[in-house]
Image 1 (tube, rainbow, N blue to C red):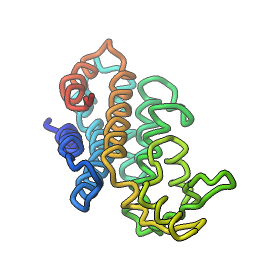
Image 2 (image 1 turned 135 degrees about the vertical axis):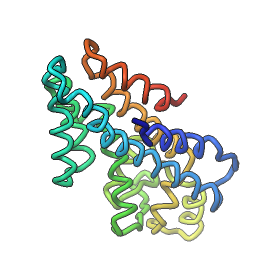
Image 3 (image 1 turned 135 degrees about the horizontal axis):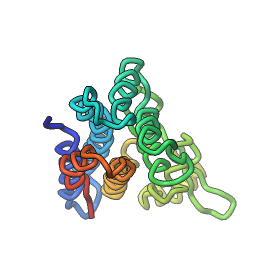
Image 4 (image 1 turned 120 degrees about the vertical axis):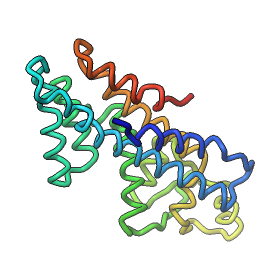
Amino acid sequence: MYGNAGSLFRNAVEMCEAISSPRPSGQHRREALSSIILAVISCEAFINELPELAKPWQESPKSPGWLKGLAAILGEAEESHASIESKYHLAKFVFTGQPFDKGATPFQDFALLIDIRNIMVHAKPLEASLEKNDQGEFFWSKPPLMRRLQAARIVGVDENLKQAANSNNADKLIADMVSQISSQDVALWACRAASAMVNSIIDSVPGDFDFRAVLELAYRKEFQIA
């Protein structure tokens, strides 16, 4: 079987690395946004390809129980329109008997990446509010996603916005959220988050059966980033 996940991820990385403009521009932001979205899609493609890769072993009496159940469990998750996060939890549970720790990496970054994707494609409000605190420091107050991104040091505050606020003696500004997220730094973080999540699944597969080797061959090299 030839999957698309690796190719999608390589495209995300190449688009991120191709951004060369020293200052943000329209083209720069479009390339960064495309890289972020492709990174998310590559994760979705990977988890959807897993049950297809497992199918050849379903009928074999030598196959371990976890492998026989993988295709059925993820197949049912797809039919019930389960979230991407739920599918990764299920795969992790099948392989190890434990879901991901939601409060730790790589799942924490992965969940944040999925939230970025969701807010961009589900027609939610895309305005971001920038405010100044009592110490004169600017911070993103709304939406909650921007606060989380700033707290995680993934998104900062553009110097041009600071200057605009200061020149107008404004304690609050409204900015386009997509523009603030669409940067090479965020795209690089997104690619690393996607790589870490996929590789964590590969690492969790028991190594005493050929399925681990199949995943290593099909995905390990493709989901690498410096």
